[in-house]
Length: 95
Image 1 (cartoon, rainbow, N blue to C red):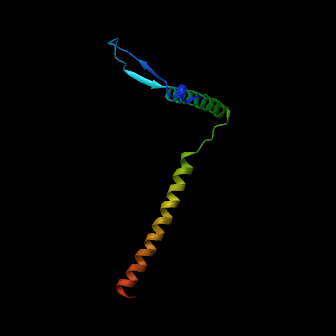
Image 2 (image 1 turned 30 degrees about the horizontal axis):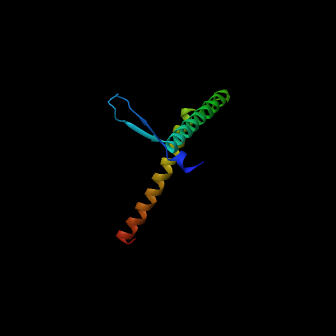
């Protein structure tokens, strides 16, 4: 495109006071249109993926399993800390 076309500005007077309130150039308008198209395409892709996900079988997690996993994890952590405390006591008391 010729440089003269890209440098043209569009002035918009919103309150009819004779002075332009908004000045836009062709580059900005092109970027704005591209952004709107990009957002629209992203939205349509996300809605399509959501509809696909609705058709998939639901994965159910039993609360008991989650609680048991947490208890097992915490028990291992407590055991590790008890071992560390014993090691520290041995160092302090030189056993």
